[in-house]
Image (cartoon, rainbow, N blue to C red; front, top):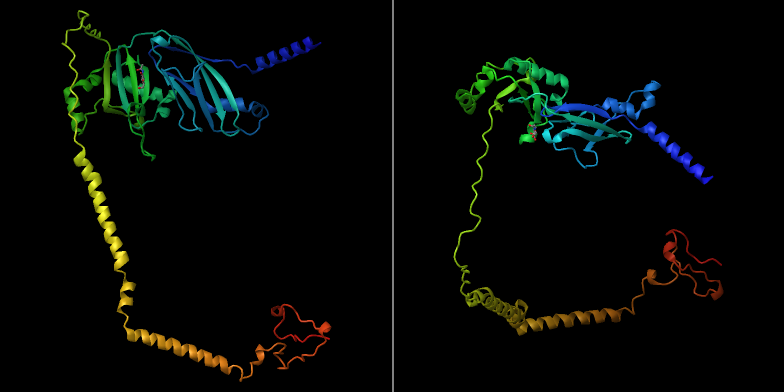
Length: 403
Ligand SMILES: *[C@@H]1O[C@H](CO)[C@@H](O)[C@H](O)[C@H]1NC(C)=O
């Protein structure tokens, strides 16, 4: 019984995994040529909202970010790079595979929808094939008014290639590499309209350079660039002003001539030359620290003691108050004494005369402030109700005790 339940579960899991499995995206590219794969947000939007499309719901335009890595590796292969300017832009995987990247390159793409935070995983298989034809003549052009994301779409690549085709005088041209100037130590431009990072575009061909391109190598051209004056741009042509090439930062890379092999390293006998006995350096002479001790400890200490003595003398023997008491004359002392005596006898007289004068009424108990009447003192003691707290009474309320 339990066994059957297990199999049912396994079957459901298998069927659901079949449903979830996505067909891989498969791409072919030869060694030595630029590979570009566009990660389209629109396409992934359909993956996130498969039913919206069917039932004609409203179409979202969600921000998305991509995370790409080689399968079972944390990062992309070295030849492949990823760029996405903004979550509302498409992403691009691009790069030039080398001979050692031949074969299958499996790339995992994780898409995160930044609105719903749903994720989606896709797989891209790049089959790198051997180079179709050698491209011994290569040239790198700098396009100053472009950014990498604006050059990678295939239509812009075509535009640029068409301009170069006319300059080069051949149709057999291929992109070898496209690099942002930022990857070559370029500066991040100001975030203003009309400021771009610039892009290096490398193209290759099996056809030799045109005379136009060869002029890039002339001394005259190099001198003009150093001076920074007017560059004779008789080769330039750009149908779209954004694609215009900066000639002074463009170079030819001629791979047609075989590179001379590096000279072999000279091999020695394998035995080190005798350098003589090891002579350890003598230790430095002992240093006398007494002058340092006197300067840093004794002198400040003596100074501190002298200051303390001066301060003690000033505080104990030269205080202002002490001086004044000495200066007080006997006459002044007598006068003080006299006034004190006079004051106290005056006070004593006043105290004696207190008995003859009647006390102010307000100081007497049971005085009614309104009527000026004094309460009869012969109340029966059990009926007297005097409020304990007089201050709580209204000032005009009769405070006479009630019978
Ligand atoms: C393409 O450009 C990148 C960045 O400058 C560089 O690392 C890479 O080696 C280049 N690849 C080729 C085949 O020139």
